[in-house]
Amino acid sequence: MGAETIIKRKKKFSDEPNFTTKKEYRPAGVKETGLEFVGHEISDDGEAMNQFLHYDQLYTIRHGWNSKFFRGLLEGKIMGTRCPKCGDTWVPVRTHCWNLDCDLEHAEWVEMPLTAKVHTWTIAGWSGRSSLKRLPIILVYGIVGDSKVAIANELHGIDPWNVEFGMPLKIVFKPKAERKGIITDWHFEPADDWKPSAMNEEKERIKKLVEPVYEWVKTLK
Image (tube, rainbow, N blue to C red; front, side, top):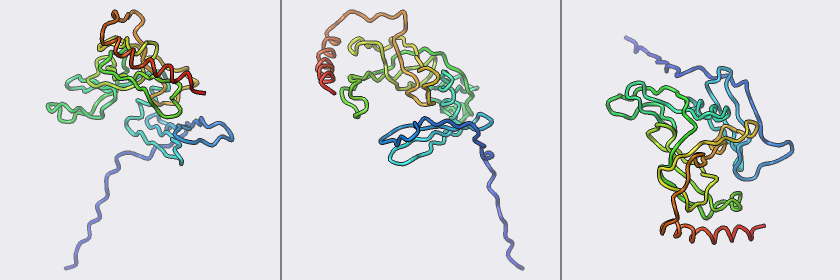
């Protein structure tokens, strides 16, 4: 009796997307040096987005199921995901719920408010060459809406020593023509009706630490 050969085919997760919407940011005749996003493409059904990153050579970042978050940035939206069982919400997004009682329930997309609060923060007194003249930089981990996790981005419009834990924030986007579907399309700013508390010993300590950075930046050409 001859051996029976069984050929098993893997089930396709999804069909190959057809990318019809493409945009390039690279100016004509310019060759990037260093790290730079130079374009993106979006599938004809709007579900998938790839981004092109130049760093000595061209890389393609395939966002897959998470594409909706990055497409939302192009539209001036912060998209999150929510578990339909327990209601937990996440920005940055999660594909499945990590709550043990939810058994990896697949998350649903939700549009988040453009408001947040400071979870924690730090001050950068040094950076790569492209950002030296912007020092000191305030980096905040902010909780967007009712998210269970925090997302990192810069905080503008405030002196570093006046940042406070739990302070309310608003999310501010770049003009539509300047957006690339990347995290730097937006930043945090203090909420319009928020005022910092009075100077105290800790704020004075931070101010003393960052003032030399401001003076050093003034010497840069």
